[in-house]
Image 1 (cartoon, one colour):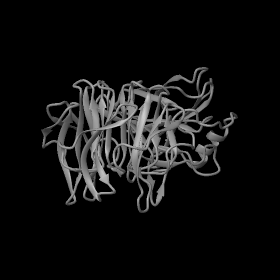
Image 2: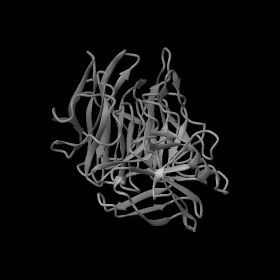
Image 3: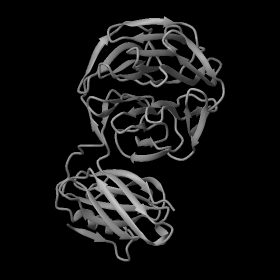
Image 4: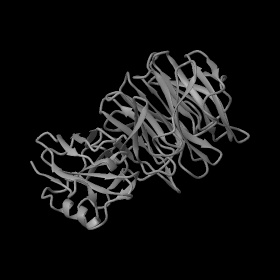
Length: 431
């Protein structure tokens, strides 16, 4: 199998050197078959501020409402995604609205919807509705105060829907926590994460906690991670995704981890929360946007992203996220200049790969004129290094052992799967 190390183990990589190594691959560039892929064009119309939840009993993503722009732009239609196509299932139920929230109660087999901006009333509302797969029923009009831009997730261990924060009339962000048990709302906390709106939460079945990330407070974006165990909120981390708001999170049941996609002032990057830390899986993907839905669909094994807003453009596309095209791991003996084990899987069988390293995470695009030009790496251009050029084995895996210089400690590494022009997750060599 082919393996080429840079001279002096790792040397500074110029664009010319990178171009040479990318262009020596004789395998044709193919369409990406993992990571992000485009779904069908047919489905709900363009919108932002809608809400969606995954119905595990019927293996369907349920979507309701949203805003399509202009006067009378709020929607009250209900759609379901079955893994291959969207189907319109109702045009009645809750009033036309946007910036509401939904979660699926897997014990009672209903989607729970709360609040949002009711366009007909010209006000935020605090009504609670449930979708059983056939019809909507209003089940409560009390509980949390009227609000929009809040977030909800279902805690399957305790059997309650968790709601946190949002935005209320009077232009004030909230920091209260409520739980819905199927018959009533109960306020369970008034402290924890600072006040915010347009954050995202997802229930981590592995840790049995609800995970929260990001959001707005006035013009400030948060980049903090918190978890709720049913008793108290715990601050978990300030490291991981850059501060953002109007993003989305979901739980990948196949790989047992929380996924986060995109948000304000970000590319459509994907991160995962596992074992109390964030790992970046992807940088490029669909056009950046905000205020979309993103739900993991078990039957197809994909994260399903729909719609959103960028500038004045309302999207109506369906974008699918699969497992990263190549999964990179490293083991080192930092800070000594000891061996560095580089391993990957899920790359193109017998295909060429390039492993790069940089001083920081970032957003570096391969220059034009090269193979895979325009592909965006999760690495910055600062101290960009070419680690190796190699070929995967017949099942797309490989394990290599290098002699790592001491200065490599703290560097970030990423693999580029040349045949598919797809990138792996980003890995940091821990000092």
